[in-house]
Length: 209
Image (cartoon, rainbow, N blue to C red; front, side):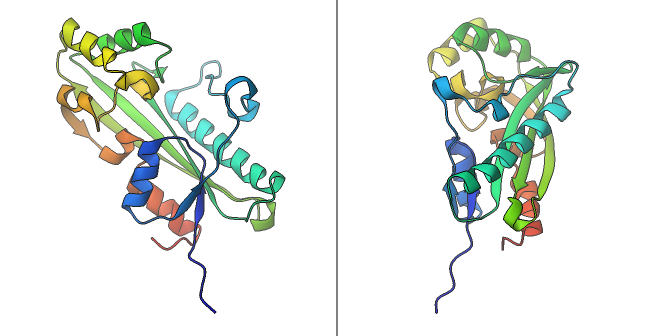
């Protein structure tokens, strides 16, 4: 009999994470949470009091993966590892996530102009009770330096719509690449899924990458 190809679930709506997983040949199915007026309380991304950016990123990614593993059982889906991730910026110790609106995006980009910031992407994989209720995480930390941005550049970039769903109000894989003077760390981690750390986690769950 033919052997079934190994697959995982990806608990993310990010097209960038889907593309990165496909880049390294990982086969996956999307596991979507509720959204809009029925947000899953288990995965609310509000920071806790005095929470550091590093701890925040890992906590949120782990919560998404753990919640995804529970959903598999509730929805009676095939049992497989669930992969989730979270990306945030650390600007002077402050957690900077996705912009609330265009004005917030412009303010964030103004803060990033002419200086360095840290990009943190945490990856988590979880399995449900039938697989031993296991959770593993890894954190990718990169440093990005922006050149000085003119106000008109920021205005045009915000008007393009690209910053709206991006942590830190920019996508290094898009138009914002022209803002970046230097990066230190994982380019794929800055995009949204660090492939080195992801591959190591998948291997720990016996996925052949």
